[in-house]
Image (tube, rainbow, N blue to C red; front, side):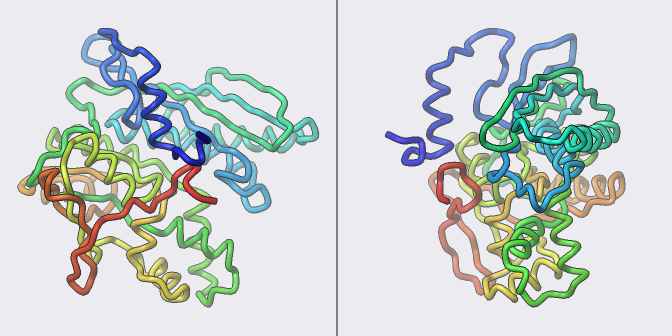
Length: 338
């Protein structure tokens, strides 16, 4: 069987059965945004790794090296944030074609350092090797979280509500504008959305408020599309879910792209990765205070978009017209489709 036939997440599940992580200092292994390891006192160590591969994660003709450096760091910081933690250290592995210009590599690192400096992250080492098939950047990141602030995908309970930070679907709208520059949207909207795709941000301050509150029950970052990412919470928490399309926080700019593409606005939200917002669950009584606290401390709006159901009730998306259909995981999946 080829990995393209099996798929990304079934492959991860199979590999997880091979490695042995049964040890007292491994609290959470494969299956969440980051591994959770016993550390010192009331703190836990978080460890994650992610890649930016030329032609898969980014387009070299579109993204400046500074933007690529920032992005490579953000995708890892977002995983740490999804656990309620704060990123601290990064190790960078570069695979470079021999003809890569030194100035390009230095610019990439300057972008990386600029993003690291915003949150006190230190790039403490790494590796450089030759590539025969484009640039690849792998970053391993370590962070810490207080034990009582740790957020997992596995804590959602029936009766909880589902919330999301910021707006969803803008990055995918920007990517559509890259691939189809003829789409009739205003120039300012085009620039806004393409920048949103090229320059994502990790929701570290928002995650800190959520984790510190002690009221949220599960959390994940929106990196592969809301439909797929909420599915991970359902799997790990053994619950179902119902989302309402009309409640999805899709900006007027992203809606204008959906209209130009002649697709429903909610498809951008459900299928779009690269927004790097946070999707989390909480008891309904806690949601108003959480939304207020996040808005006051970070300026980010939080929206209730659904409810958690018992597992046997399944996963649903209620369309704007009231039709209740299945929630299909149509977000990004490596090996899923070309």
